[in-house]
Image (cartoon, one colour):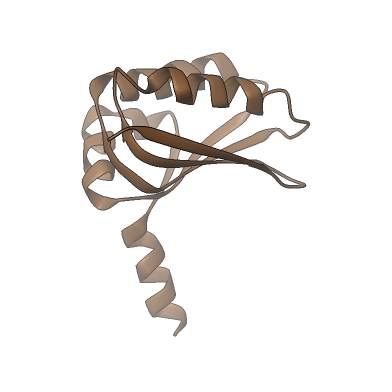
Length: 114
């Protein structure tokens, strides 16, 4: 499956919604979206991963590269990462560099507040 991206700007952050697979053939789409997000007058870029089905090593490498390039100018975070993708991100060590919020964490918060 391909990757589609929606870019939304809010007062305090820019939201990039990922839908599909992040791999070698689709990383350029995300790279362009992050570059466009840096042109918007916010300092926080949030990648909404709710619909992200999979991520390859190329996708992980791009996320780390983006974090390095944005450091000091923008804050990058991952939101609502599916559990299967979150496991890979944790194993790769990328969560040491990019804040990640998982779908499981969100479900636990909802259960606690209900």
